[in-house]
Image (cartoon, rainbow, N blue to C red; front, side, top):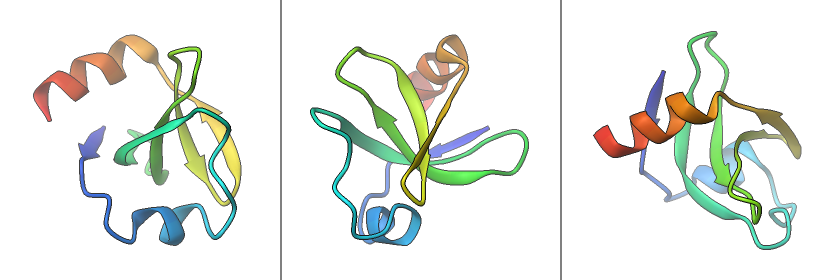
Length: 71
């Protein structure tokens, strides 16, 4: 799993023109261990998810928190 804190153009590239979920925060770009790539979002409830083309995928929360400390 790789996390990049790059944000320039990332939202439109992976999410499109749609608004992000309410009260969410874009943390960067993520590539999962299975090869899926998208934006890393932190939702208002504190959960981290992969955002791609308007859909959200739940991620391993412990692994994400650990990787964010390294990034």
